[in-house]
Image (cartoon, rainbow, N blue to C red; front, side, top):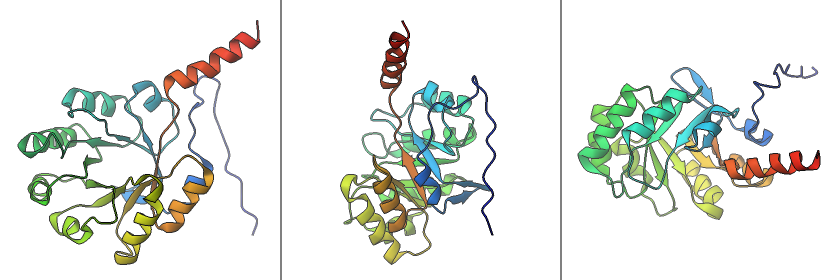
Length: 222
């Protein structure tokens, strides 16, 4: 049977300038609260969050998590948001309070940093009704203890070792949900999916890079 092409309807003003690589759609996806997600855009830039075609947003940043930032992102995003709530420098009750606030504002999940102790995961799990995502950066991670503590999803961010880490997790846990960074090329994205990732995160160009390309186009028309 011939595969029917997907109809595309868009306009000049509503067209999404930031598009996910097509390779991402080879992923199985993760069904969360009735929505099947295959792609997450990795950004806290509100303009980028509003102008992409990803299935969701992963909003993690290298600062102390702030309720105001999470609220702004959730409010403006047209798709589900996974909010960073600390687990490293920011931990304990403060992380729990930020996570509860994120849930009450509509977050689809909360993301904890790799150093997060299992005791915090367990305590947070008792208070939340949304998934807890833990970032994984090494194959040396004790995956079993994380799952036992209450983690719902692994978020693998291991640089060039990401596919290997994903493969290692998948061998031990055939059905456990895995988010992973896809890398910069179609080949790296497909490699990560083939290793067992269900959902891929994509880092888009910065607004500065996008502006530079647009300005070059404008200059060429003068």
